[in-house]
Structures are given as C-alpha cells and as structure tokens.
Length: 113
Length: 120
Image (cartoon, rainbow over all chains, first blue to last red; front, side):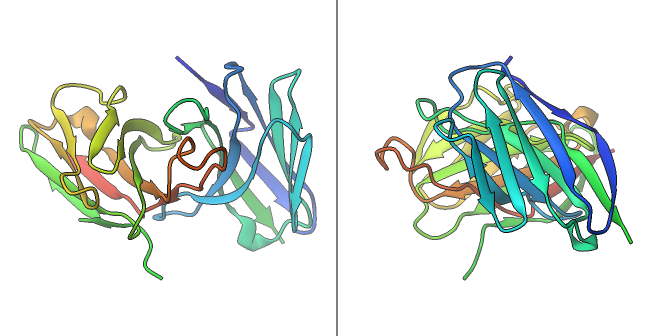
C-alpha cells in the first residue's frame, strides 16, 4: 500500500516560534505534495503545495522544503500564531494516476501564548 | 461563492441500516472524490469520478459501499447494511479539471465539511 509517513503526531509550539512537521514517502511516482490544514468539524483546506522540480516553496509564513533524493518533505510555519492551532496533513498524488490524494496520519499543532 | 456542500452533516444509523450521503460539488467541477476519515486519522481515498464516469473505486472497503454521480454533478455515497466499523467522517472533494486534461496543471481539491456517520 502506498504510504506517506508523518511526524510528529502532536506538537506544541510557543507563539512566535517555528513549527516544523515532517513527512516521508516511498512511491517515487508521486509528483505533487500538498499540505492541508483541518479545523475541528471542517474539511481539510489546502495550505501550500509543491512539485518535485523545486526544493522549496514559500507562501507567507508557510514554507515547504522538499528533498527528492531522501523522499522527504516538511512544512515550516514561521511566527506561529494561536490561530494556527489545527491538525495538519501532508499528502501526495501522482499526475499519471487519478490525482487521488494519499494522506499522512496528521499532526495536531497547538500554539501556546 | 458556494463551496462543496455535504448532507446530512451528521447521521446516526443502527447496525444493518442503509444510509445515503450526498455531495454537491462546486459548480462546473469535473472531478469528484470521496474519502473516509476515521477518528484521529488522515482521509483515505474511496472512489473517484470524472464527470459521470466512475474511474476508480479501488478504495471502497467492501461491496456494501456504492457511489454514483449520474448527471456529472451531485454524487451519492450509499452504504448498505452498515457496520460499526463504517463509523467515520465521509469527505467529498471536487476539482475543476483532472491533471491530464489540464495538460500538466494540477488543480486543487476543495473539500466539503464531511458527514459524520455513527453506527450504533
């Protein structure tokens, strides 16, 4: 089964700090790597996504770092705010497939004042 | 604008009952996906439609699960003879076009709020 492994399971970061969540994948056919944010009772919402032809993508306070040779990618949230407290999922999909997303198991992020 | 809507938001079913979950995708979106999210887990793929064609149903856990999208817009996920292990949040997502049709531009999947199914 195709898998995406995500860590840590939960994370507590002080306000203003940097939150870092890591993911690793096995299937080299994956070529699209999005991160989703989910609040309780809501569906996942896309935060930022990256293709393997770049090693880093930044949008505001959110940055994806991608290491193709290690088959790893990570999400960095700079200047973390209490409003960032949510569950974050990494995911992967293949452009030659049906674009179905394979999700990691999620990281519950809590930002404390 | 309107996003993906799902109904009902909550459903309690007794074991053995049939249930039907509805998804209204964003108007004009070609691709529609169903995912199952168990408590504390990431969503898992169930099935995929491109317009009215069901192109992949490899994630459906058993033949008790059936999905349709007869007119290429609204979709229904039906679960027959529900079991306790079917308890989960069922998420629907839609995207404007498929990657291949877009010629390389991958379009975002927009998720609905989900239907929380509890089987007692």
